Length: 116
Image (tube, rainbow, N blue to C red; front, side, top):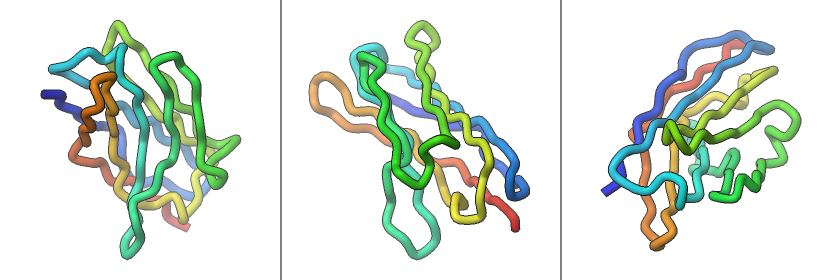
């Protein structure tokens, strides 16, 4: 059983920055693909950025050039650096783990609010 705990959300003005972190426990982090998703009010959850166990990254078009995902396997941590934030980035951000064995886990989410 993998547990994911996010931190780093908050309220920021347009153009500001935030850094989200997700610490994993209870599994083999280095053999998991990791991702950040977000869900805005009234909208479906969407993938924001992902990083594979081989550190291949993928980003939603809406965040390319502004967000950077990274991972530290020794610390079992995946981070999301978010720069030049926009009001449309507002939502609950969730950490996601997809293990080598095909299991999927979610964190509890952290709120990001970008004021205009």
